[in-house]
Image (cartoon, rainbow, N blue to C red; front, side):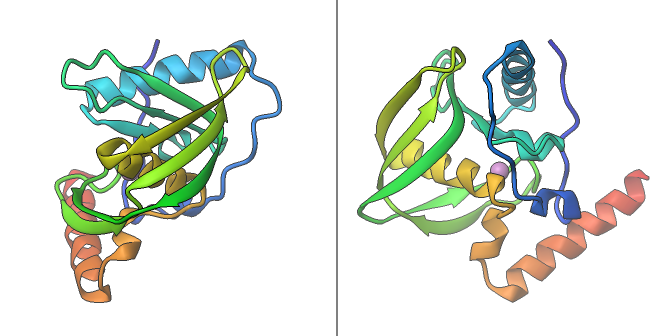
Length: 167
Ligand code: NI
């Protein structure tokens, strides 16, 4: 397994629309393992392949306290079932910033698992939020896109400054 480098906002590669996975093969399973290791190490509760510059429709999530409930979704298709939930969101690609975002509280996701089998999952609350956040990444969308221009610009400038210092 490997820890992959996570792209940080405003890196334009985060805006790439991810491609559908045609076959769930060993390469995809290795990527899943690497995504989980990268997410657990960061640490974070979700990670999309887009964030490690691999533009395929693959996301991993684990919102459990004990970090022992891994969810992998390949080619996830999201259906909004309703409700509204407002929560503080962060993102491993937007390190250090947490902002309030409103999303659907109840979703249905259809996807393939690591064996290429299709499954469905209904989710509410934090898991629903996390699934929507990660699926957005596959479309090149980030949680900062839901914020005001003022807030987004402030975050972008601070991160650009940090990237200059680090470089
Ligand atoms: Ni994110």
